[in-house]
Length: 407
Image (cartoon, rainbow, N blue to C red):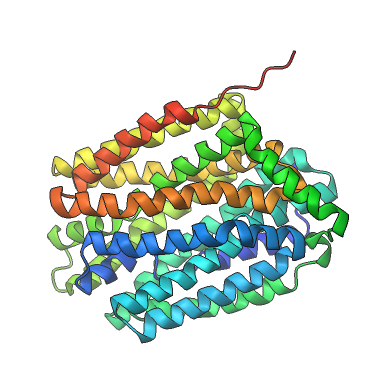
C-alpha cells in the first residue's frame, strides 16, 4: 500500500462497512414480488426514490459544501432509519412510496458528500496522488460489509422465514454509523467564509463548462445507472434457480432462496472487495484513466447484454457469472471514476460536483427502472436486460472520454 493508514482511514472504512449492512438489499425485489407487485410497480417505486434524489441532490450538495458535510451525513442516517421503520410497520404500496421518498432524501444527503470528506482529508494530508489506492481501499471495506450483509441477511430470512424482518435489523448498524459520522474531525467540514460562498457557486457552474468534467460526469452517471437498474434482476433469477435445483428439497422455497441468494451475493461482494482494492493497479496497467473508463464501459454494456441473452436462452447459471463479472467491473471502475472527477472539479465544490454526477445517474434510473420493468413484465427479464445492455453501449458514443492533450 502506497499510503499510511491513519486513524481516520479506519473510520472512513467503518462508515462504508456499516453503511452496506443493508439487510434488505439482497431480498427487497423478492419481498416486493411476494407482496404481489409487478416489475412495473417495483420500477415505479424505484423511480419515486430517484426523482426524490434528483429534487434534493443539488440543494443537499450545496448545504454539505457550505454548512457542513458531517451534519449532512448525520441527516442522511436519520432519514434512512425513518424509512426502514415505515417499510416494516406499514407494508403497502403507498406507505412504501413514502419510505422511498425518505430513503431518497437520505441518499441525496449522502451521495458525493462522504467522498468529498475523504478527498478533503487527503488534500489536508497532501497525499492526493494516492486517491485511487486510498478510495479503493475504503471501498473494499464497503464491499466486505456487503459480503457479510449477504450472509447475515440470508440467516435472518432463513430462521425467521420472513423477508420483513430485514428492515428493523438494518436500523442497528445505521445507528452505530450515525455515531461514527457525528464524531468525525471538525476540520473535515472546512469552514467556508461568506466571501467564498459566491466562489462555490461559480466553481460549480464551471464544472459543466469544462468538456472533460462534463463528459466525466455523464460517463460515470450513465454506467452506474445501467448497473444499478440491471443488477436488481439478479434476485428473481436466483430465486427461480433455487426453486428449480433438485437439492435441499426438504426446505421451504424461501429457505432455499435465502441460502442461494446469500451465498451468491457473499461471493460477489467478497470478490468485489478485491477488485476495489486493486483498482489503482488495474488503471496503471491499462494506461491513462480515460482509456480505463472507456474500456470498462464497453465491457459493462457487453456483460449486461450477455446476461440477458443467456437468461433468454435458458442458461441462468451463465447469467449469474456475467452478473458477477459486472459487479467486479463496477467496483474496480468506481475508484478510477472518482479520481478522474476529482482532477476536474475544484475541491471547494467537490460534494456538489459529485452530487451532480449522482444526479445524472438518478435521473437515468428514474427513467430506466419503470421502462425495464415494463419490458420484463411484457417480454421477460432476458429481453429486458439485453435491450438495456445494447442501449448502454449506444450511449457510450455520447460520453466517450478523450485524453487531455497539452500543448
